[in-house]
Image (tube, rainbow over all chains, first blue to last red; front, side, top):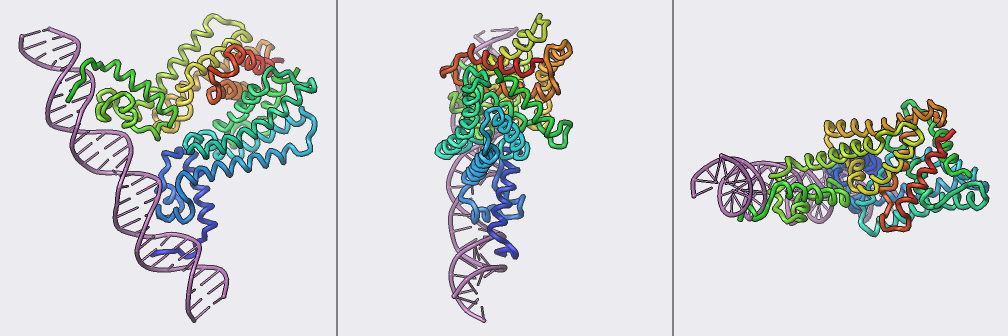
Length: 196
Length: 196
DNA sequence: TATAAAAACGATCATACGTTCGTATCCAGA
DNA sequence: TCTGGATACGAACGTATGATCGTTTTTATA
């Protein structure tokens, strides 16, 4: 046998990405074997190499894709907002929504950083830093205008990010808590926490 | 060759635990090989099995130990405190301190849960639930006395825990921020966030 | 001092892994 | 219709892994 009827590079690569996302999320990068991945999409292990360079490369591709999308979406969500308070609210709503919708990507993007080779990791960390900086800027601006009272901008930003990101580990879209309520609760916690 | 002079089961097991903690923390459970672990403490791979049942068993042992210690330490830290506000402050200070001092254990205890077989994982999750419940109780009590304003106790507890636990990923004991300042910042963020 | 348990060695097992390669088939463009 | 690149198969490679086992030496007990 050889090439399957109806096979297309684009579709197969998409399937590899989707399956990789799923398997890495549930088993971890190291624990996921390419045989598992190939089987999931009905392929022989060797055939994967028509679409990916290496296993390591697939991981970087997934995480990098995620980070770039995250950053672009954030800019979109904050576009045109000048007021720091409004911006902080928008940041919170965006971050929560995105992290609910892309639980797997987000989880992998933080928990599998250590599985990246150093050079790749540095690239991702730099992108993450950009994201963090965006929140820092909002906090700083708000503090500057006397809206917020913040002892240390970066520590506060990390604390807020940790809080908001935490939902990835437990939130269940079909669960007791609706999305709006979730955003409300967190918005109140954060806003009241940083207010003067 | 055979048994080494001066070898003792207790010391070797302690060395295995310590090295395991370190290697799992920096490379992950799946990525850590028993050969690596054995080499770290100057042992042949096979000799490990005089002290552990399996690799999986070692992981459970480490996490379980951590959880039990965590719970006991928390009770100690909260002993004799009746006032919810005071209790919340004590909880925050304890949680941060413990998580700074045992970064590795805490990290493994959450990031490697998925590497545990289901039965073991359930045991750990139950212990974690007990810990969470302790914070829930404080929040509930505070809300009941009209000190706190909390829309959903469990969601708020998760949010607070996520925030406080986040420091494990970035805090550097030798860094810019001292322990006291760190506790102050977080205490203010949380307290002001939940206050009426 | 005699003896059994404890602890280590070193060789080895079966298995699983990521990856490569030659070959066969399909599809798109000339 | 012909041709060449794209895509997949299936076998295989070398390596690493977790674990087992027989043996040897040390330590503790009586």
